[in-house]
Length: 623
Image (cartoon, rainbow, N blue to C red):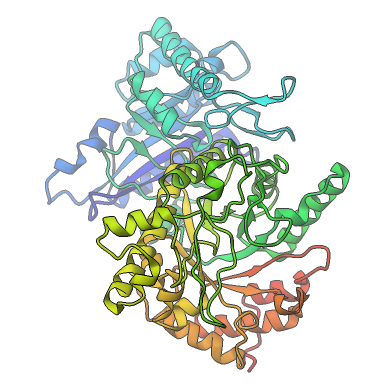
């Protein structure tokens, strides 16, 4: 059984939190659970919290300025007979309104199951409202060929016998039927019509919300840790609280607002290449994945940037991908399985899908395969992007890229997107036909050669390219949010963009804009790759420029290299990496990551790097 609290802080009437109390722990008996509730509720009352119904919460924006109380709405998830006989009398005694999340499937006769008669008695008190939890949405279903089981509401079922995923039509039909079945059973048995829907495991997407609203389920409850923007919001977010938390601890944490895992809490990031894990031998591949999980646990990192594309030739562009899609070859349907294993078997809080934005090597049969960035011949030693890329100015390429991202969103579990460092254009790009059309629309000279002749036009052209790349990435993120509403975003930036103001011209990247538009700027802090003569000076210069930007330290991940690619990928000693981590922490860096993790060479070594990542560093940072 789960108990949930919606917290609306009086000083901020436009924002509130949802607290979800998980009471399913076998270590807490029913009697002890309800004793804790009584203590918590009394303490909340004594600290100026006021319990209201859902309607009371939604009307809270109209209350008088003199009302300083904080409002709480309590929700109990899947109540049973223990709740009816021991928990519900507590609500009656204290006269506390409550929402019960219920499913007709659990109303069948059985040990400790709630009955229809129990529900009717509680509804007659006027304190109880009900939320539709679906008929079978709290179950998991097979999500991929490996047999992983994931939330029914958002997963496209993988049909093992037919070796295929359910179609979008089948998916919509299944969700609609499930919600409607629960609606009809409650209306037929006790005459109750739902207006609330509770998504089990917090799993919902745009499709489920649309289907729910068509069934008059106008407000949703989920289990996400984001702060609510309004008490009249259509989706009310929740935070999970331990069932054994004392009343005093609860009050203290509410006061400190420390229950939320904020997107910008310090990150310790590992880059994982699926190309390293993939193996045509299924037994070897399973061993590779098991070894990865061991390394993640040993390293104690909290974020993984997981490669979703295949780049076996190492040119930075995607030849294939690791998820079902309509545009590119599937090397193996592997990304969802690995992401879910990381989520299920490690302490990692966020798994990001690491994806190219433009660098797609399409099959020749695709018309868009030839719609590529065109680079003019440049002077010697000039910045060379190297990646084959689709033109960001091509509308057809834009739609093709969107299709890839939409398929990723449908068929995979993840929490965020990392946009690869291919999202860039040099000051000799793009001279494609699609770019010429865009330049003309923007009242620029049509060709790159003509633009380069005019410094003022060059400056405006650079800004337009930077904005085009940003907007393309943001559009991909918004499309993915249709399936993953709480998605986080990060974007790779080259170090030169931060170190030299004029470098935006060379790369069409901007630290300031990235910090404004994305959750994180993931900067390639790689002095070996940059041929920096003094590594400490390189890091310090980078840090000072990041600190000067608004939210710079909070929203920047410093990505360190574990290989020297100048010498064919020679591993960099973990002791050097650990010393660098300690030095950067000592200077105030908050978020650190490394790329890549090479489990076959034990590079980096968790026994050496983990203490540094956990701030167990010498008192005097190394020089």
